[in-house]
Length: 203
Length: 203
Image 1 (cartoon, one colour):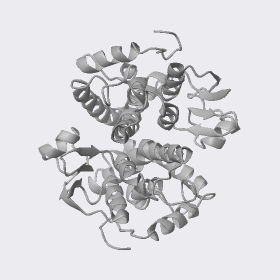
Image 2: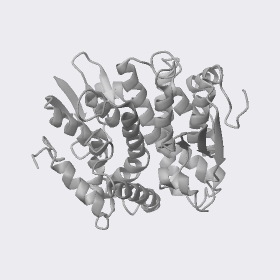
Image 3: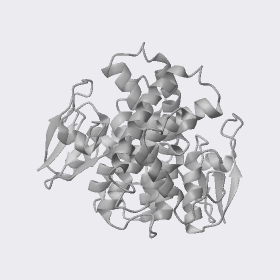
Image 4: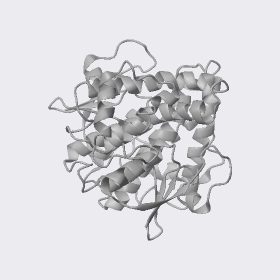
């Protein structure tokens, strides 16, 4: 049985839970409190010295870190990752964009504001991230106003990656009200067979 | 002929120049001043609405954004990207890590300190990024103290991606003096056939 070092409110962990739900792959979870400074379990640290989640442990003891590479691993050979190499490069383009300017701004602000409750202390950091995160959302809105999904007209791991923190962007102080293309795309993602919510319920 | 929208001091652009140098692929460049607020060329904006570089334009007019997906594109079928799927997933793990916590902290601080010359104005942001960037360098040091290169014992696009901003990390206020494994790895990267420096010279 797969073992997932998991934090339920983490969008990065949610990506893994979502692809496994789509594929019907069972797994156990070990819940980590990411707001706690307590030492992380040694098995988690062995695979990610920074103690970040998700980390997935396979039957043979191998571990896998980084949410988007876990998506890639499980996506291969399924409808969630195209076979065409140009399409795959385009999937990667969006996955890198997500990690570089979307997750590092929207997820970080969400954590500082809604989980650490340190908005005042980190006001300058939040303002800096906010400008960059708005750029990420603007880029998504422009792309989704012309495309049903991120790559090749089909729901893929690129959509899963973006959905994770976009659907809770309000918890990081980001407004989606003026972004109709993103809102319609969120609905299309929620309508995919096997979708589960961040808390694990059927939609 | 390939056309690269380039900024010579940008590590992300350097990644592209480095893989193309290794492969002996010729290209033209259009230099962009990333410290300028002047409008970016429409052809660049068409492929990256945020106006970020690198963007690579192919003969047929197609464009490709995101440095690490460009590395992936050119790495396929060469010694710079392993064929084994597990090794590839491991390459991706490091490429995502690089974009998420290495580039977004070390490159951003380098830009604020050494290119915008706004260290005082962005002091809180720089301090926040510094803590995260140190964690990224600690992770690299630990891995490289046990491995000659990032994946599979061979120089790959994962090494190219990390080299770009690590070798100039001092410009972002990061010290490598206490990290011998990183320093030896930097030397190994510089010794690769076809290596060029950031300014374009042979080493």
